[in-house]
Length: 143
Length: 92
Image 1 (cartoon, helix red, strand yellow):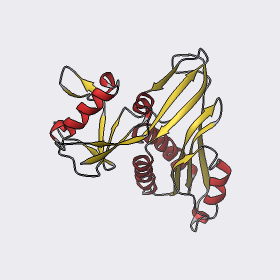
Image 2: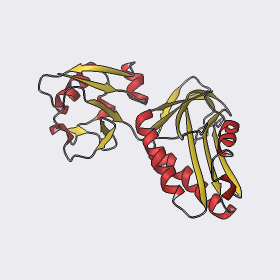
Image 3: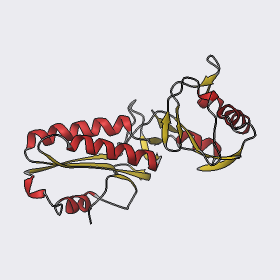
């Protein structure tokens, strides 16, 4: 089954499943590399405050639309075979996976460029919010 | 007339709800905002006293589409419309 980009609940999907699905698409023989980015929960905030966990909320319908648009736009570039963005939602502990970005490309150069673009785009454009739970018991939505 | 309001992030925390139906008489977004401001402690999050309007950093979504009207308070709502007020996004 081909994996669709979008918002998934924690535990619903993992990187192995995505790679397995990608290897089965019709034009995968055109690819010479697969690039992956996994966003995980860091143990400290941007200001250095110790973090114990994170909650991710998402507006699924809106986020799915933006993710599809980003993937379709990036797939237009020559040499890009497929782009998959999966953002998880739910409650997460330190080091657990939050996001997967996977790019299959004919050659490594366009693959590296595209995965960087995909990460920058999803960070700014999709309707997802994160709340950091701190070790001191407080918590905050990060913007 | 009823509309559906969807809550995310801070709005979900404050209201304690993912969504709810709200009954309107005048069918305007202004009426909906007034009802929500009187019902929940969301004034700081949603309302800019200086400009007497929704904060500039809040995105208004109606039926899964972003609305960019200059004065959103004048928007007329329809039965069954789904409305969300979004704070700036922060992907993981």
